[in-house]
Length: 140
Image 1 (cartoon, rainbow, N blue to C red):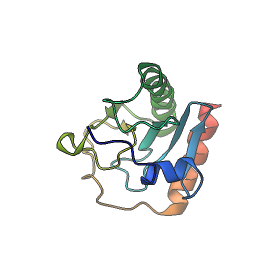
Image 2: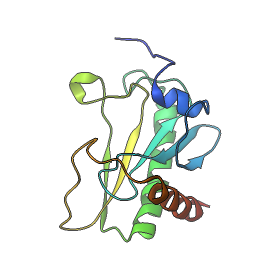
Image 3: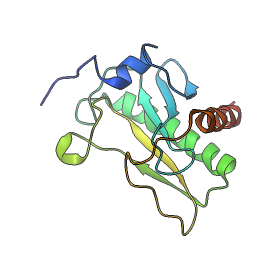
């Protein structure tokens, strides 16, 4: 299996080398909004530990990331008036993974509204900033 590459874009975000619209952080996990969301409020939850994906992450770090994903899912339903939530997690290129740092997608959903295609529309920074502010407040 390929090894973890510390130069991946999410590792750079975790180190503060690249900007993001952060919604949550603690000593073990970090969450921010996807800049090309498939729906309003589309968030990504990452372990702070270096982990390529589910195949190499420690069970404790994986469990913690899912705990945070659940917390964000509940806040997303409240903030965005969602009817449901889609949780996605991809592993290796054959499994659809594009960025090789473990991450879980938390996507609030409204009944009858299709998801945008992956990586199709870059959201306006001011919209993401407003959504991040709302989600951050709901997570406190």
